[in-house]
Every structure is written in structure tokens, then in C-alpha cells.
Image 1: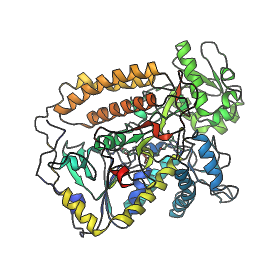
Image 2 (image 1 turned 180 degrees about the horizontal axis):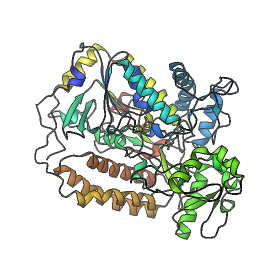
Image 3 (image 1 turned 135 degrees about the horizontal axis):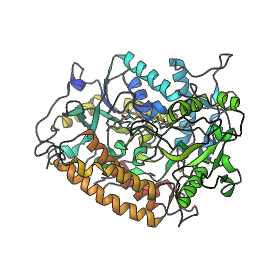
Image 4 (image 1 turned 120 degrees about the vertical axis):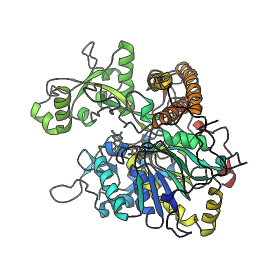
Length: 572
Ligand SMILES: Cc1cc2nc3c(=O)[nH]c(=O)nc-3n(C[C@H](O)[C@H](O)[C@H](O)COP(=O)(O)OP(=O)(O)OC[C@H]3O[C@@H](n4cnc5c(N)ncnc54)[C@H](O)[C@@H]3O)c2cc1C
């Protein structure tokens, strides 16, 4: 069958990974060019050859969209213990305390490294770093570059990576499958990653990229929902790739929704991420109103009204939308002085006025909650190692345990660099010439991709609607408020759609669209299964039929693939 099993005994060598190197120089394959992948590549280039494959333009990553900043207890008034405590409170009793301890302590050093490398964080008139404060943080500890931190970080890291001269960065290269023992003759169970099969979207060719160490840094999965702040690349590929290759995934039920994203698209092309309306606007007095009644509604849901925690505000908006059949609610700040609004929210004021003809000094803003952040992911240890040897997962794709049931704002960029560094350190300790030689000998047996029998996608129209259908199922039944009934209904439907997609995939020439659809459907399915497994309400996961918290374990929603070998369990 095409597209599932490469031809046997036809080893190929990828020039990007094999040209002109000494036998003991490690070869790294990094999948993804957001903060996690770029930070790893920057460090790894010091002692090996690095190839980054990334499926779109190099800076098309969630990292580029980050606004608020990166948290680190670097202020003289702050310390890592306070950051630790705030992270645990946000995590609703499910954080892995050792992972959080690592995050807050090592995070200080990693952010200091960024500063020392020259990352242009905003400074005050006195030249000192400016620390912002965000929801859930009891201290000012968020370093930022105005309100476009992610854009600056991404271009800063891209420049530094290019300057090493040892990193090959391939845009429009989308990973199809991780290469494992499954692709070796006679071996069925996968225990080791040897690189990946990668689609060059421009030529349509699928090449084998062999590597001694493979790094999954593919980011999140906001695109499983129709309304999301995430860019089009966030289709959960890493979770799907790792799960198919034999890795466990965990806690996918905890998907963070940002309460207030702009409900309008204007003339933006389809797929443009929803524009965020910062929480700071409610901090300055903006009020959420039901557009049908004109009534402020947060008083019905929480004593802190519009300043209630993020998940509570998102649930309240969701309840108003569902009860009254609304497309959006209003966020209204028109009662404040116009000059004050323009001064405090220049980006929002300018964007809404120019692109949507909304003047926030006189018009209320239509908002909806939007899928924002995947707290769960691929199960890893404290060094980012997955269930497969030589496969690491870092950044949003990984489940390190630092976020528990809800992510503390600005901890995700931090997680990316902290665990990238730890992964590299572990690789440095463990990679010996002997292990490199053994991995390469096995990898030499891998086969090239087999296109035989694959046909042109003339029936694409049959499944192109599946994107939309999956997303609307996820929005209607697996959104902010869930129930067993809704989740079971969603799973039945997604199972059918997934079956159709796999059937299509197995006989059709592969494209990036098809890969993303297949991954997105699997991640939707896994998310629903995780949500069904957590029979309680906790953090971001709210079940109407289980409104109490009663399952204080992260591991309740670990999902094992059918062919999970348990190697890591056995070796532990
Ligand atoms: C609007 C917005 C605002 C945010 N604000 C903040 C903030 O202020 N502070 C904070 O800490 N966090 C914030 N976050 C979250 C944070 O930006 C992300 O969690 C973080 O950037 C993820 O980094 P990453 O490197 O793991 O993944 P990403 O930055 O998403 O990068 C993933 C990369 O993998 C590539 N890729 C994916 N699949 C494949 C494949 N199959 N083959 C090849 N390449 C692939 C993508 O093209 C991309 O290059 C925000 C997120 C959004 C969307």
C-alpha cells in the first residue's frame, strides 16, 4: 500500500546530513523553526551539524505572534520560588513540581543568556529592563519587546542561527513521518528515531533525512478549532507524528482558550489567526456585554466580574453565546476617556480603526473566545526525551508537566528555551562515538519513501470539507464547556471522518494539506479521548456532568498508541 511503507533495502543518503563531516560529529534534525527549535539549533551548532526543516516560511510559527513576553524572576523584588508558586496555582493541582522547579530556576539563566546575546527587550528611560505583569503573576516578571515580543524573538534567533554557519534551514519542508525501526525490514516495533521522511512542498518529493538525534519542535494545535489565535502551521503535527511512531501523549484535554479575540475577519484571507484583544483592556475597565440585551453579564458568573480568571471569563462568554445563539459578545470600553484609550491601546485602536472601521472610543468590540494554547502534548522526561530513543520533544508540542491543568501566562516561551537547553545537555552526555556508529548502521538500512500506486488527488474535494467539519465538531462539542454526551457524539463523528481520511491518504499522492488534515484529525480524536478520560472539572477542562475536581493526577489522561513498547518504562 502506498504512503505507509517505504521501499525496503534502498538506502538513500541526504546530502544535507552527510556531506563532508567526520564520523563522530553528531547530526541533528530539528523539526520546526519557532523558539524551541531555533534555540536548540543555535546551541547544537556548537558541536554538530544541524538541519532544520520547517513546513512554511521560516518565521511562520506561533512564536512570531507572542505579544506579552517571557516570564523570568530576574527583578530584584522577585525570586524563582514566587514564580514557582504562581505557576502551581495556575496549574490547578496538576503541575509536576520538579519540572516547574527546573523551569523557574533554569529559566532565569536562559533568559539572561538571551539578554547577553543581545535580544532587544524593552528598557525604561533609565536603561533598566522593563518587567510587565500579567494575570496570575504576583510580581512583575515578564520581559518583553513592547507588544511584539514574539516577532522580535523569532527574527533575533533566526539571525543568530544563520550566523553560526552550521545550520541548514529548509523552509516549505513538511515532515511526513518519523523514521523508526518500523521502516526497517522485519522490525515492527519502534524504539528509536533515525530522522524523518520529509516532503519538499515545492517539488513534491519525499526524502529521507537521517539523523543521530531528532528534535520535535512543531508547536501547538490551535487549528483543530475554527476560531484560534494560532497561525495556520499549528495543526498538531508533532503530537500526531510522535503518537504514530509509538510515543505516549498526555493531558490534551487542557486546551487554553483566550477569552477575548476579535470576532471579525474583515478582508483578511481565510486562515488568518484571530486578532487578540489583550486582557489589559478589561484591567483598565472594559466591560463584557450581551449584544442582545445590552446587559453586562460577568456579575452573574464571578464576584470579580470582568476581572475574573481567564478560564472563568471564557466559560461565561461561551454560556452567553450558546444560550442566546449569538456569534459574539461585546467588549465595551467606550465609557472611558477617548485620549486615555488611544494612549493605552495604540495597537488595538489603530488595527481596529484601519482594518475593521471600529473606533473603540465609541464602538464596542465584538469578541469571542479563541483556542490559544495546548497545555498537554508528547510525554517527555525532564530532559525532553520521548518514549523513543534519540527523539526529543521541546516547546509547545511537549508535555513536560510544567503547565498542569492551566498555563500561567508567558511561561510557554520560557519552557521552549529551558527544555531545549536540557535536551541538548542530555544529548551531549549520552552521545558517544559507539552509540553514533550503532544508530548510523541501523539508519543505513532505512528505505526511501514509496509512492507506488499513489494517485493524483482528483477526489480531494471529497475530503477537503473535512477540515471544516472537524473544526466545527471540536467547537460545538469539545470547546470550553463539555459533557460526556457531547464528547461521545464528537468522537463518533471524528472517528468516521478520520477513517475516510486514512483511506484517502493511503492511495493518494501526498501534499502538505493532506498531511495536515490527517494530523489534525488524529489530534482532534486524541483530544476528545483525553477529555472523556478526565471525569471531573479542573483547570481548563470543564464537564457539566462532573462539575467537581476529583482526579488529582496528570497521568489519568495518558494515551498509549496500540504499538507502544513501554521501552522507557522498562528502562526507568
Ligand atoms: C497570539 C499568541 C500570543 C502568545 N503570547 C505569548 C506570550 O506573550 N508569552 C508566551 O510565553 N507565550 C505566548 N504564546 C504562546 C507561545 O507563542 C507558543 O507556545 C510558543 O511560541 C511555541 O513555540 P514552539 O517553538 O514550541 O512552536 P512554534 O513557534 O509554533 O513553532 C512550530 C514550528 O514547527 C513547524 N512545523 C509544524 N509542523 C511541522 C511539520 N510537520 N514539518 C515541519 N515543520 C513543522 C512550524 O512551521 C513552526 O515553524 C502566544 C501564542 C499566540 C498564538
